[in-house]
Length: 334
Length: 291
Image 1 (cartoon, one colour):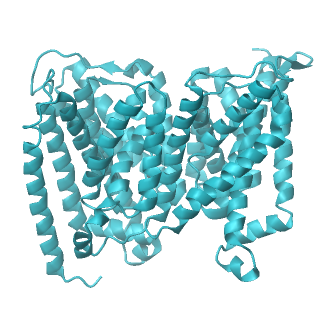
Image 2 (cartoon, one colour):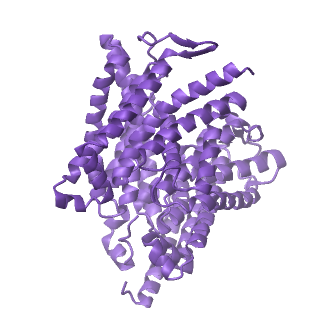
Image 3 (cartoon, helix red, strand yellow):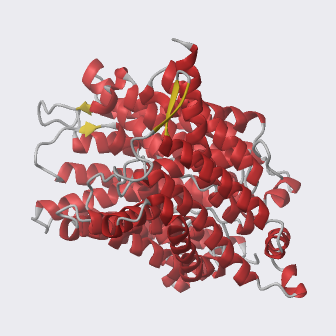
C-alpha cells in the first residue's frame, strides 16, 4: 500500500464529515413521514445497521465469520429485560450489564473457537449459538420457551417505554447505529484495526510481524459482542418481548451478518448500506408475499441473498468506486 | 431401570447414529473435496424425504424400492447446485469463503420456502410402507423394523462410498482434494470431479432421506435439525474423513439416546453439544481429521 499517511488522515476526516451529514439527514428523516409502518421499518433498519456494524468488527475487519451472533444479541436482550422486570433496574443502566455480558460471552466463545480457522470457526460459532438456544428453551430462570414480556407501565425515557410513538425509538436506534459506526471508525484507524486486517489477510505473515493474533481476535470479539448485546437490549425494549426463538435463533444470526456481507465486509459504510437495502426488502417481502405463510417470501429472500452474494461479492459499497479506491483497502479476501 | 431398556435405547441410538453418519458423510465428502461447507445440506435431506413422500402417494411405490430413484434424483440436484451456484461462488474474486457460506445459506432459505409453497407447513408421514408398524424382537429388546432397515441401508451406503474411493474416479477425487490445480496437468477435469462429488454427496443424503421418510415426520424445516447434527458429527469425526463420519455419527446417536434416557428428552442434544465442545478443546481437528 503506497498511500501517504496524510492521505489516510484526509480520508478519515472525510468519513467523519460524511458520517455527521448522514446523522443529521437520518435525524430529520422521520419528520415528514406520517405512516407508522414506514417509521417502524426505519427503526428496524437502524437497529440492524448497528448490529451488523458490531458483527463487522469481528467478521469483517478481523475476518472471523461468526454464525452465532444471535447468542450475544439474546444475552443482551435477556439481561436488560430481566434486570428491568424483576429488579426494577431501568434499561439505560441495564444496557451496561448487557454490554458487559455480551463481551464476556464473546470471550468465552472465542477462547475455544479462535483456535479454529475458516469454516471450522463458522460452524463452531453456529453450534455454540444453537447450544445456548436449547439451554434457554429449557431454563426456568429465563421463563424457558415462554419468553419474557416487558409490561408497559408509563411513557418514560428512564424506562425506555413509549406507547405507539415510534419517534423516540427512532432516535434511540439512530444513536445506537451512530455509536456503533463511531466505534468502528475509531478502531479502524487504531492499532487493533491494523492488527485485525493483518490477521484476516494472512495469519502467518501477521505473526511474523509480531501481531499478537489471539489477543487481537479476542479484542475484536469483545467489542463485537458488546455492541450486539446492546442492540439486543434495545430490541427487547422496542418489541416489549423476548423469547428464545426471536432472540437466539440461527436466522437472527444470519440476519445480523447479512447487511455487512451485502453492503461490504470490512468496510465502514458496508453495514449501513447493506441494512438500508436488505432490511426494508426483507420486511416488505414478508408483508407482501408471505402474508399467508406460503413460503414465497422465503424463496424471494433466499434468492436475493444468493444473487447479491454472487453478483457483488465485494459488497454494494463497491458501486461507489471512487470512494473505495481512495480507501485503497477494499480488495480484501475472506 | 432395567438393563433391557438401556440396551434397547442404546441400540435405537446406534441405528439413528448410522443415519446421522450417512448425512454427515455427504457433507464431509464435499467439504474435503473443495473446502465448501454446504449450509443447505439439511434441505437436501428434506427434498429427498418429500420426493419419497410424493412418489409413495402417487404411485404407491414403497420407500424401500424408491432408493435408486431418489438417490439418482438427488445426484442430479447435487450436480445442478454445483453447476448453477457453487462453481460461480468458487469463481468470484473477492471474499470467496464468505460468498460460499452465504450462497448456500440463501439456497437453504429458498428451498424451505419452496417446500412450504408446494406442500404447506403441515407435518407429513408415510404410515403404510412395507416396513411400517413392524418390529424386530430379540428377547426383551424390541426395535422398529423401519429403523433397523435404515441403519442397515446406511451401513451398506457407507460400504459403497468406501468402494467408490478405490475406483479410478475415487483416485481422481483424492488427487483433486490434494491439489486442485495440479490435477489438470495429468488430465483430470477438475470441474467434472467437483460436480460428480456434489452428485455423490447429495445422493448420499438422498439415501438417508428415503430411509428416514419411512419412520420420521416430514416438514419444510425438518432438515435444519439434521444439518446441525451433521455439522457437529463432521467436526467431531474430522472434516473430509469417511471413517470419522461413521464413528462420530454412531457416537452422536448413542450420546443423544443416553442423554434423553438419563437426563431429559428435551435436552437430548445437550449431550451432543457437550461432547463437541470437549473435542473442540482437546482435539480441534476432530477424531480422525487431518491437518
